[in-house]
Length: 265
Ligand SMILES: Cc1cc2nc3c(=O)[nH]c(=O)nc-3n(C[C@H](O)[C@H](O)[C@H](O)COP(=O)(O)OP(=O)(O)OC[C@H]3O[C@@H](n4cnc5c(N)ncnc54)[C@H](O)[C@@H]3O)c2cc1C
Ligand code: FES
Image 1 (cartoon, rainbow, N blue to C red):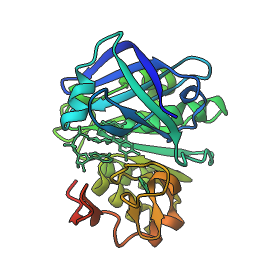
Image 2 (spheres, rainbow, N blue to C red):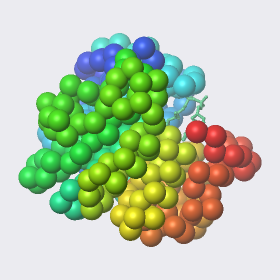
Image 3 (cartoon, rainbow, N blue to C red):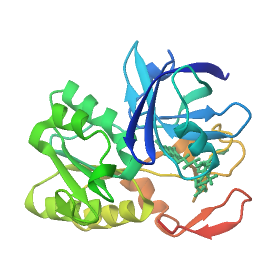
Image 4 (cartoon, rainbow, N blue to C red):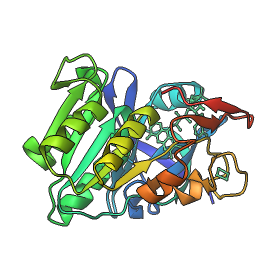
């Protein structure tokens, strides 16, 4: 059932990224890594990770403007309404004593609530917060307040922190430290690189995948990857499943018409 949610607060995170806060009882009970289907009145319905999960309180979406639906969301103001279904899918499993979380771009949306879940259990993860440039580093204050110097900043252009991709920074930390599990969300090619490097060191991974999600109920098949459907079997896949879909992971996906196309980012 779709529910109406009123936007209570809008926070600009970067020139092309906003966080929209709203109250919804079901979303406030979600697990880190789950997503909601967001319907824009008169427009499309698209999947969005829940970037704030506050039991009994506010939830949020963190949206990057990449097309028509996301642009409409990025232009929303306090008091505007969206339709919400969900939360859906399998989120992250919280495990390990020295986890490494690797976020690229809007991937931070799905990993920030996971960092909070770890802290609630008395574990302080290392968090790589990566973006193209310093002004794109979303939730920097929220994460630094939570994790202090366990937040490692990385920018592609070197304007802040490590110079290079989050995945390159992750390799450095895999070699210097000893993460016993890695969680990643961001551009697919970045996640493939994190997965391959972790595999060669025997470190388990949980990665949040993106495919074209329409029904979110496992019915239409538009989100298929190997034998799985991202909408229900994911979006979070563990190393065992990632090995099974490795041929498609980082290489092939379906476009909205069902045609197989390459993964280019
Ligand atoms: C589980 C999941 C969680 C996501 N979480 C976030 C998030 O937290 N923040 C965020 O900014 N983006 C997130 N996305 C991506 C977001 O859903 C797409 O960027 C958005 O649907 C693009 O729609 P558009 O109309 O603005 O752009 P379009 O021009 O329609 O598309 C731009 C790109 O998004 C892809 N896309 C379009 N519609 C869908 C769809 N229904 N399902 C999947 N991909 C689609 C297209 O294939 C294309 O690559 C998530 C996607 C998934 C699958
Ligand atoms: S979106 Fe329809 S099967 Fe996954």
